[in-house]
Image (cartoon, rainbow, N blue to C red; front, side):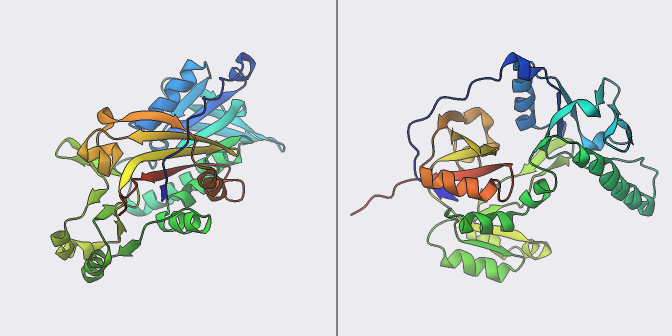
Length: 307
């Protein structure tokens, strides 16, 4: 998805009033090592907003749940070894890629499958039943993980989407690269992060070496290849209840220019105001017709020389 360089920035919205800060608590559901969630928590703390952060991976070994329905509403507590959360006091939920529940290592595979399903339907269902605002809304977070759907919806809403191939056929990948006028990038469908030999590793977007398209490993799973877009900078837009908050991301290293997540220390940020047609497309993509909240990553295309 691409945009042209934006207009002069608009000032950020004012902080909420002190009275709003004290109404209820924010439940933050995220992985323990998530820099984006860390920034959200830092800002909530700065605004004196009470919060409770947890990862679904803590359930049931480190996080306990007890909730009851009285015929009108759900009430109860979430507890870990540090604090507890009154479910009736939850004003909003920030859902940012929590990891899956963990169960005792001795649990057999069939029992684990049942436990995982019951945790998803019971614990997850209870959280979805809370009468509060979600970012993003329950159910929509899963939809947002499907990149092919994202690209189709973005195109339908007027945003420009680069040529894209999804395949596990090396021959199809080679043919796609040969037909693209310029470099091709590989992008994982979702967050790929783990630990190998004691070191943290991750898979990022990368420029494809055409010789690598002969790798038989391509046949082992689905891969996404995309025509590379010459970029001036990237733009991250967050939509909340029909309002768009946009920030330019300027990369200061070669690695970050391919995928800004590779080198956070090289990045510079700037509040911006995207062109009206882009704002309309983004609102249609993640607005009330589809979601009440969401994030969109765009590229501001470099202007090509003419003549």
